[in-house]
Length: 362
Image (cartoon, rainbow, N blue to C red; front, side, top):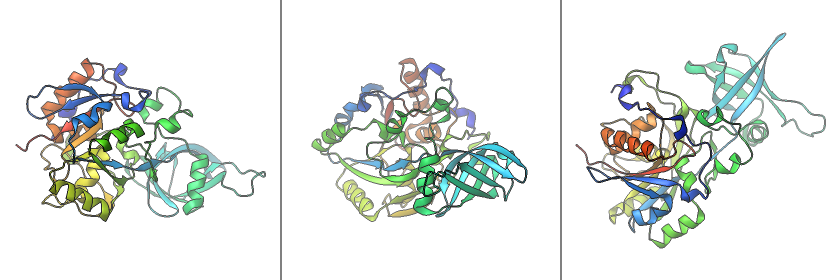
């Protein structure tokens, strides 16, 4: 499909730079199939918008401080580079996006942090070697530390990677360390938050449970590729970056049993949806899954596992707007976004939510 079909005008004033407080006070646009009018609700209304027996599926990945600033050291010359880690490839290897990548060659060393005589260990400094260079500024780095030692070094030296449409307007601060994590974040490895989950609170979970709505967790480590624009003119020419995820056998069984009883699978966020669809068999059965997924969902895709999607509002021409258009219908989503802009909804990672009910197959 032509990528320009997924374009729309978004005023700068619609981009949210801070989340709503409390989290579940954010607005939520309800989009049902056909010509059912849009509903302007709030996230707090979620228990009333779902049915007993439905099951929420949430991504429990935890964001790491994956933006690093380093110094490329090459003989007598040095150059400053910015590195955005996006996918772990081993105990001491990461794929990353480098800026400016043209300053790096295979075999170059990058030094992050400084040595300190006051510390017993050198976790305040870590080196990395450029092992590979790819397209679009992508590099593969092998670090001088591995495993938990590398994780600790990254935690010390890294910066929380706010999305570029926020980071370009204000500096990251201490408040973001809490705001940009879900309350249920557990498994470290993401470089971007599963932002639909940012709206949940302990009180909302309590009310959902009282309503008879279950919850299950999956893990998909969101990569920095989620921020990359689609530069191709046709969706068939776009390449998705792989992300690692897992659906446990216990979770798969619980979801299959819920659907057999008539409950619906409600994906909280596009990351949960993409992982569930990657794990689903042709008959809709959700199987255990562990590995990479680079699934790219555009209109015409036949959904197998997910019935309802809670998600934030996405960028024009983005793979995520393509996904929601596949789920609820392109024209329906264009109309929904037009309504949201006119009604003053807040967009992107710190913005408001939408609750989408899957369109009937054409």
